[in-house]
Length: 115
Image (cartoon, rainbow, N blue to C red; front, side):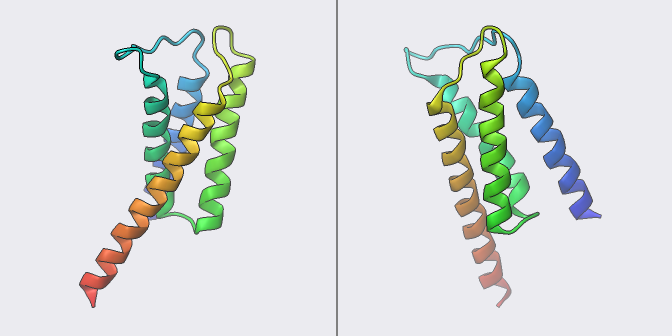
């Protein structure tokens, strides 16, 4: 039962990603002229990584993650007011890597506490 709930949550989150990245002319607030949108990309894909980490092995996790990151950015090529930005892809991939290692570290600690 838990696995099905996790799958549904992951699917819903992926839909949310495509809705957000596909929204025309989405304005993000600037914080002291920093590229805050990269932080948004990081957070969105970090959450996706945490949702996916418990459902799949490393290879599947990274394949799914990279595909979603790339498709989410590629769709912006056809959305009016949106731009394709390689740094957004980098932020998404970095988020996946960090979420994987955060989850892996957490899993290792819980395994040690069982011993």
